[in-house]
Image (cartoon, rainbow, N blue to C red; front, side, top):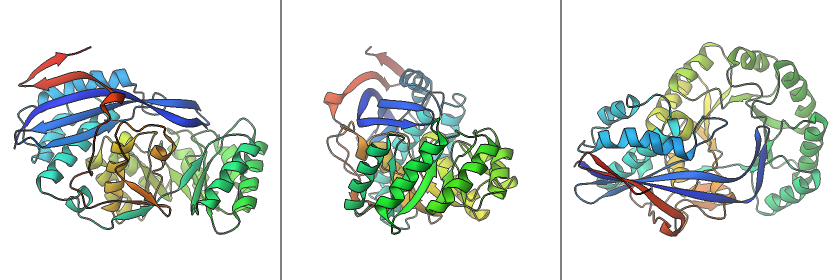
Length: 375
């Protein structure tokens, strides 16, 4: 089994409604989809969901990075995953979502070869995992309307984006949601690095009366010492997100006692291989994980769900981005959403992926160590 061909596509996913967090408002995501083919004709699919604000990547930088990574993989055996991963990691510095797309495609390909769903190939723990649904920063009226809709859908966990310019407005929105959903729905808040250490502690003390279960990334990503201080002075559990991209970052969180939870995202970690390392570090330190997402489509959501369902230390997920998209770059969803769970099928690999070629543009083809641009 050897890799004989790789194809790179670009496409855009459009949101059903604008999505606002403390870092800004988004209306669409510029994605990159790849297909890796072996000498038996098996195909593995991957997706990069770059974020300029969090990852320092764009669709164009991902395509440029893949122009370095993919030619070096032609002729290699994907089953030699440790070696192939070494080649990927050392081909270019950072560019984590570009690397994630390749890592995902390789895992899809290998698990298909062994005729197993990816979550079982990875070890298998469950075929479903509970997910939250996120409410972005919006007016109180819009917030209440969305909260009522989620309550009707029997959503069990709601994540509320906070960190707007007005803390009073954030608190009012949180209060309104709690009044709508009652006490049977869990609430999390996510500040996306919006607060200073002092303001974070003040805000958490104000918000805890609404029975919030945890606070995600209250301070700047680089301020691990500040995150640790907030954790020591908070009665609500703290989750690190943007502070943890790599296994090395997870070690730093553990050393400084900076979080009760770590949010693992494949786009941050560079794929499933490093995500598993972060989960192992977390579990060894007694820190639980969730698995989150950017605003990616079906392929990346499928990969994240398979990883989550293979990992006991992942206690729930934040994998709802595809549910808020008008299009997902595939003809149909690969991962079912049912009763607040993401549910996996027994299909091999990531599942039955059919690319929506009318939403994608082929931009690069690699084979026999040669590239052919179709720009």
